[in-house]
Image: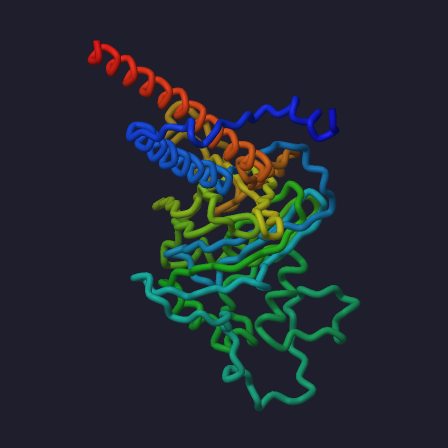
Length: 389
């Protein structure tokens, strides 16, 4: 037998003679319906192939030595910008006191309208005393070591305040200080007493356990203690409080799927000496989107606590005894989770799976259509035989 004739024994697709084929109306209807179903199912397979799913994964965060950005926008309606400070510190020992870099302080009227968005300057050039002798050396009022006397001068109000801060002395509003009265500092401070303040911007910190807080007065550190000069805040004739509204607070770049629990939060108090505390757990998160570079950011959860500095019991917590002491203000303590969440975008199936699905759809529908057509054909022949009888 010739080689080509041998291959015919393996032919699984036997052919029929064209004259033996019969085309029927029912077969045409079944064929049209089958084609429509095949097209619809292939479109469905294509949509399923193009569908993107998010597959979250939880791993141990092995990164080390990273920094983290804190994005904030908070309004204090009854605390002037001049006496409001932002400090940051962490367990590594790094401290950022009176943070101004990357931060914008906006002065607000009592009704919340904006006065100025420029950096606050209570000691403008117009307040300098040009008539002072070029060799003038202002006193520091005992706030410098004796060995530096005669070599260190305090020619401006800020110089005196900084000298007082270095030795841990309360400064007050500048009354009786020659440099401050010359620069009209006490009067300007009084004019701002009824203002509020909005603080917005970004602070870069080490990605370790730490805290940042808003408190009144200049800050300074002594051994094992962080302090604030509360003299102006406590003695002001205007009753300042730390009622605040958190417009936005996030850690790292913003992603549209990340919700920030503290956004839109408002806390109110009528007490001058009151402390608000937020305890935040930060979780590292990476978003991997198809066709884009991965985005490293953070999510967080939060719990809060508030208490009066005077301590004791209050109406909201009759069975709780609060500790006495502390600094009035708003404190955010953040902890870093050892786990990391990866949100990875993937297609629901591969292109190979799509092709397999298309073949299965076409073959399956045609097989079922063939069975239906055969059944209709046999039924039609049986009816015709009965009519012939």
